[in-house]
Length: 225
Image (cartoon, rainbow, N blue to C red; front, side):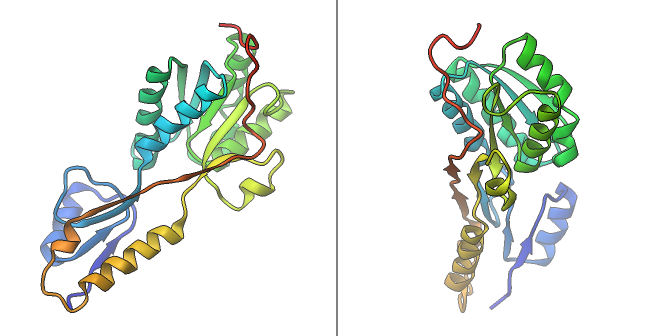
């Protein structure tokens, strides 16, 4: 068997072409829409964004802020575009704010978010990941804005701190065990085979929404549009 190479992280196009010349069996953990000649295992980040807008709309939110990371990160890019698509479909007015995808990235956006909540009556935030959400919530608390009483927060990743932080985060779980299991399954199926056809497939995984304390259902008439 020709052992596969695992591509972890986002690669530049020229680097992908170099890898393809050396290896005939490749497994990527990122989505490359323009490549169909190696296996790809990834979560549907675009659908996460669409579903986030749908969930916020179901909770009665009509004005939402999306805090996201730089465009170079595939997950941030697809989640943002999915959220924009979902917001338009659900009739949600939205604002996009960009920062780093870490605690400080969320923390430094607090002034802008607080202004939108206080003066423009935005009632929800969809954060690109849990660390941004936690940083934002802490900074909003320092400004006297409480989650979820004054603004709801929905996030992605379900890191261990998400359930321990107060208030506990409502977030999408991206189970790494699912990725590992699919990877080993793909490798097992191809063992002893000279064919590479199984390494031309896409395995798209679906996240699971974990409902906790940061998402609040609005009562009819509680928003000012």
